Image 1 (tube, rainbow, N blue to C red):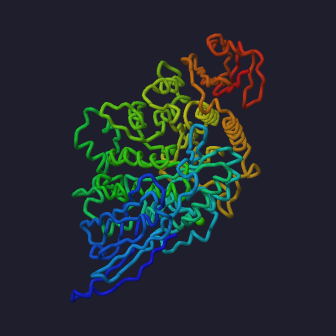
Image 2 (cartoon, rainbow, N blue to C red):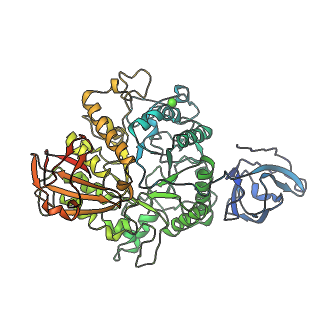
Image 3 (cartoon, rainbow, N blue to C red):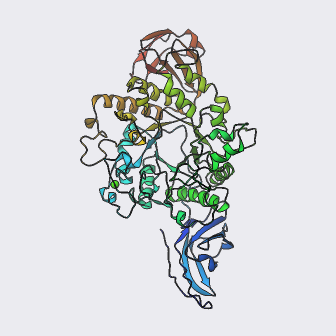
Length: 615
Ligand code: CA
């Protein structure tokens, strides 16, 4: 689709020296007719491109303003696309003294039917998070990308292992067998840097899938294949920082394109400075303007060109790849006014579109600040529909591994949910036990599978949108060496030709792995079929003696969940839960399939969960 037509390099006739002019990039490389917002700002990059005069001749596609910045190798073109503009190809001409020096054929594509009305991920879905370099290597040929700065080396846990889009495509049946409905794939955009390029969080080209993962077309094909199966795709995006190897770092449009410091200055990672009424200016400043890492320059979203670049880039990918959602990395780190404008512009074009922001904060009130519609004292509205439930993640990691006490043990889960009054939309929160940045849940529970099952039962029955990290279903752990991020992001066994076993198949899994896989798959498929767990109301009872009971209910259906956090089996009298139970005579426990014909007493094995569909 890149139709970069360049024929350039002419002498400027009235100047007595030659001035080389090139046209190297136009971004976004193409656009669409029919958006609500008629404005489009093009970044144009090429040697001395700012010396040219630009013109556009196309009905309904009007060049309003040509913006020059410090660096003469850039132009920013403000264009409008009128509502009656027809799809087609517009010619953008670059001239010096009436002589054409370059031109770009700019495609205005028609939007796909129903594009604006697309349904996004919701609490009906189950998100499966995978790291593409570590999931499956479907195309060994793209491992040999010798033109890239880092080569495949599977023996290095921090190196590239060769996983790719083809590897994900090869396992669509696997996802459906497990039952997950939505893929969140860690970033796939080009990361052309010498080290740690595998995780994808150091973008070097915002419009290009990394060739070691595949092509832009492969990504679109993946999206379409998921849609054919009724599945959804979430793209991981990063507005806060780019990678040090980004093409523009060698030749910045202006000195304020990135936040610059006299010497390298790291962010303090304290996202709470935004909501802290006592935060010092220097702390707040360092949080927003400090660099995330030496290799991750901090973008200055207060610069209007940076702002438009990022916002348009996200809309471009939604429209181009037919995305069903976005996960925004380090959401509070960019300038928050820009992030709110982004959300607003995205939702103007796609009213039902969902975005989940990584607002990694420890308290519900701090996280709730970032959810759209929050009544914040400072008047800020983020326009971010969904946040990750980090406080609940934290509670979940402690709840099953410590003695029961007034504020320890399973009561932690109860206490976190009791603070849901902070959230404008508590059911639109992503709940998870782990992800690519933290210890795998089994590691934090010292390999206790019972606790992992409890955590999975919980995130699949509590309010919100569950997220499961790849490999959880096969008991993946960091192994003996738990150091470094690489250990949390191991290769999925069977994802590489020549692997000693293939854990994508029941035959390739151990007995214990199959037990976990089957438990999870059963629970997931049951959840998929039961609306009451997606949108039903939630009501819980104060935990007592290590037993936590909650209900999900709507007009049609009621589900009772009983968690036993004791090591030993417990039999409980259920009179206390009569405000729900009095209407029911029996129930079915969904994992065992057992019928329960006497609900007055329930017996629950130690460290386990009963999920009872009441009748
Ligand atoms: Ca590969």
